[in-house]
Amino acid sequence: MPNVVDLDVVSNRCRSCRFGNNCALNIDSENSPTDSSSRMRLLHRGEKLFGEGSTADALYRVRSGVIKISVTDAEGREQVTGFCGPGDFVGLDAVYDEQYTNEATALDTTCVCILPKHILSANDGDIPHRLRQLIKALSQHVHDHDRLQLSLAQDTAAQRMANFLLNLSAQREAAGLDGDDLALPMSRAEIANYLALAVETVSRMLTAMQREGILEVARSYVRLLDREALISLAHTQKSDVNDAEDDSMQMLSRSA
Amino acid sequence: MPNVVDLDVVSNRCRSCRFGNNCALNIDSENSPTDSSSRMRLLHRGEKLFGEGSTADALYRVRSGVIKISVTDAEGREQVTGFCGPGDFVGLDAVYDEQYTNEATALDTTCVCILPKHILSANDGDIPHRLRQLIKALSQHVHDHDRLQLSLAQDTAAQRMANFLLNLSAQREAAGLDGDDLALPMSRAEIANYLALAVETVSRMLTAMQREGILEVARSYVRLLDREALISLAHTQKSDVNDAEDDSMQMLSRSA
DNA sequence: CGGGAAGTTGAAAAAAATCAACAAATGTGG
DNA sequence: CCACATTTGTTGATTTTTTTCAACTTCCCG
Image (cartoon, rainbow over all chains, first blue to last red; front, side, top):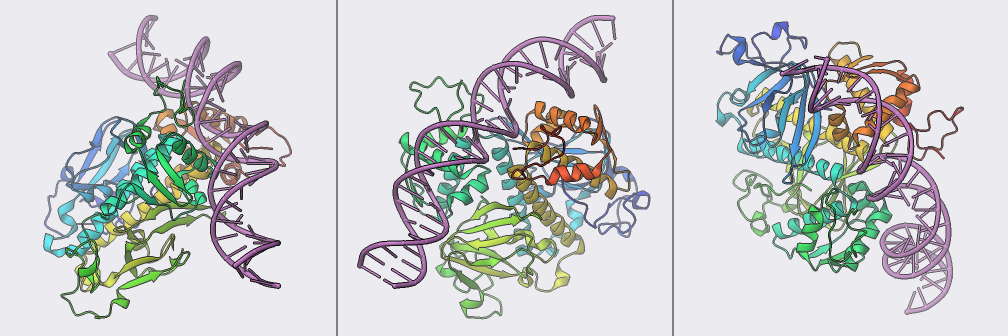
């Protein structure tokens, strides 16, 4: 749960805000609408502040109530990544690509202050290009982390391992290298820690995948032999009842 | 694992960089040192790029090699939060308070480009105060998320639940409310999803804590009766062999 | 009221952790 | 350069936490 930082609401009614009057984003002094409606929004239980993919033209700060933040993956799995209460910012990660990559839903009657993005700088030119890139990268990082949280929370050991390898592979390809040849410069213990698994489990998963002919493991080196199988493994949901031809993949898939 | 975004290195040798010459942070055109040593750093296996708490005056981008990012909690538990390869930024979250809240270690021979913070804006005044606050909030958010990852990866169900309640409590106190009276506006399913547990487990943990006299649960309302016990529960490590007087807390603590 | 969702509780199952022993690799010093 | 020691990784057996399944209760909301 995000902490409260020393920013404050940007409403004309900052004076009445429980967070005090020392709002760094206070725009009382500027030429802005005087009605509070354009500065605040009241949400009722279940109402969405914004949904995945909707255009992000503002940031929000919770004044009262609670907002649930969640992401949904391609398979439709939902992951709650945070509960934002009074003082917390919502939509920070949206700076990334002008679109929200997550969803914000009010859990009870909630009042949020609206911070239109354009007020962050008087005019666009005020933000140095580099800084803009930095914010984008930070925002992207938050987004990536949310996806990781979903994977760690809902994937099986085999899925996590598969995803890990596929990510490494994608990264290598992005760098213009052969995505089927992976170096694993980190120890098994580090992989295990990262994936929230025991060292032994990581070892077993690699062995099992090798047994299945999906990859060739040699200590700190892995060669992908069957990318399709690995991808399919990564998508094999917990609930997928296996009607596999052979039951040789007992270890890799949760079965019935 | 963070993706590659369309920023690029800021070295005088950008021309030789595999990421191409379209570096948004390219400062070749500016008055800057001509030696590449001040723009890059070579790390050997095991060498730290920076450690927790060290002053953050730069960002880095990995050119080659792999950097492990990890955080350590008060109990000394380490959590690997990412492996950064070519193209990934390192130290983004440090903008938060001028200090790195995590540790970056080279996993093999690694070359990083150095982006001194001061080059992000020609002069400090270029960054609007509000924008600065925004970056700080984003950065804080990343930091909080890393801590959450550690808790989810290493804490037991009981610990996660205890931490969850303590965080809610702290948040209420930060808002000037009574920290012992907690409203739980979210459903059990949402709590379970957030904590990466099954609904039934959440229910059982709450029941168990109530049985122990730690709290009083009433559907969407919880009252903390014994904060100390809750804190102690949150810190009871998996490995802590319980020499508890009574073994009434079987469910709450992993025991021997 | 009544019906459906949300929450609780118990029993059984399963994924993954832990324990334990071994094998392979790395690195050190003779 | 080889033996030895230490670390790292693998494999199997067992245990444990947590999940899953199932039944039941309570609470809302129409």
